[in-house]
Length: 151
Length: 144
Image 1 (cartoon, rainbow over the protein chains, first blue to last red):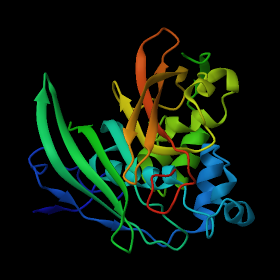
Image 2: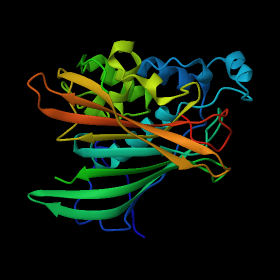
Image 3: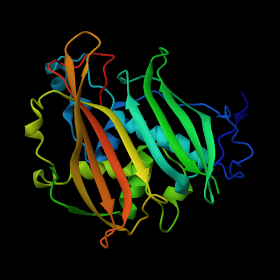
């Protein structure tokens, strides 16, 4: 499996090319800093999802959880950030995530992506990628698939 | 079974705020004059629309225990850019049951929100798959 350094515009390097995006080509994994409650609150404010289960300790315990847990859509958003850094913000055409194991404060998540399909439809070139967000335990937090056009 | 349509302005400041919150440093979101919206951005509309914009979920059964199982976004072209006005409408697209791993059945509900231009051209769709269970979620189960 070849590894492509995550390019996109973030690093200011050239975009990933169609030739590089062969089946099995992978972006360099991204390991995030440990999840914090501030991450949750910041995302909740940005998205408008104010469910207290993600920031109110007493509420979470009363609901039977040991503490607050991560907002799944935050990590889904980070996974999208990772994928669009790789393949281009304007190029995404489909992005799907499945929520698996819960993630918790202090979890260290690693985001990864691999090309699983490529096709030409009319005058468009499309690439399908499989995406994951994995906890430090090895447990899968998110499984995703996405489709991008490749200019 | 659809909710009332709602208007969503794709706002520049909200795009920047959302991109930062999802740990982006991509200038295509943070510096561009009219950036595209992040891939999961449209999900935020669900949190400020009113009850009249939601399809009648009470017809589905016990909604006290709903887990977010899957979320999918599809775009007809590039994601909508800052300054775009969209009309969204949410409907129940499907309901079905599956056997759970530990016995008992789980009910799945697919909610689809279509986002169109005011002229009616489809721009994007957001699909949420919710799982209705009878029990409290445990670690290892799907959550949002």
